[in-house]
Length: 442
Image (cartoon, rainbow, N blue to C red; front, side, top):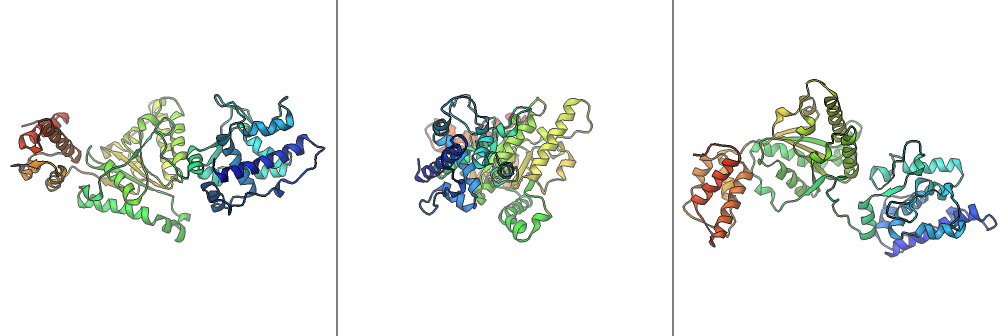
């Protein structure tokens, strides 16, 4: 454990001991909690101390942050302190706390924090409750929150949950990408390709430049120019066009160019047949992404934004609710959201009008196909007697299909222990792609 974390645990231990002493050992001399000094941030330079000082956290906010952090650093931290004063006998609801399914140590709840900070002082308890409000830094940046309670239970009985990303940041100084699972059904996108490898027509490239301009200058527009009072946060773009025309690659390269993480959302894992589950899944996704400066890429957006002319049954009703909820979360997201579809006509025009940019990714022209063919093959192969100009003119293929042909041709050459690529092998690869797409080969 780092020195800074130990300093803060020692600080919280002293604060807790004083509160427990005041409550359960009335014969001992009482001390105001505020007289217990915070650790000196000048003593140690660490991610935790930098976060506390950088966000100018108050005394109470620091206490709540360390309460949330403590079980992850020492599983018996609270038990060892509490049972010094209550001797492990009876229940003390004013202290709060819970036990996990697997973790048997004391897990602090909101009541635990309020007890430590304010005990029975109603005015101060109400003030400290604001630390858990949706408008607080902790909630806005998804740092920590209160777990939902069962209906009828006081909200303060919910466990204090700290996000894995911030826990990792405080412990190691860096944050890894969240894991792909049901809680976060999004895949991190990366590529070894560069912007020059992207072959698109000039109109499409010009529209993509607008996205890059927004990423670079939005902070100035919203903050320094004061447009956050008039404009909604974030930017919304719709990519449409046939498969393999560069929609996913463009989103990935935008992230690489602007040094932002790009996540591709698997809508098949988000959409649920159970009422309310889709909205819950979307809420989990956006809550995790909020204030992370990520680019969110929703592929096959038709799944939620397809045309719905009327409501015939309950399924249509709930599908409309899900689409409306997703649109609401997208419009309130403060980053770049890209939705992709193969067919624009599948998307309801009412939704299309809510996007800043609608960008068409067309099949590459003959000129663009020639460029793709000339760039496709690695320098290690030897290409003889192949007229790429004629191939580009005769065979209409997408960029990804051309790359598939290149891969097939190279593997065929390697299987024959040669580095030579013949036109016959390339044509075999093209025929294979035509067959996959149901096109007539001649």
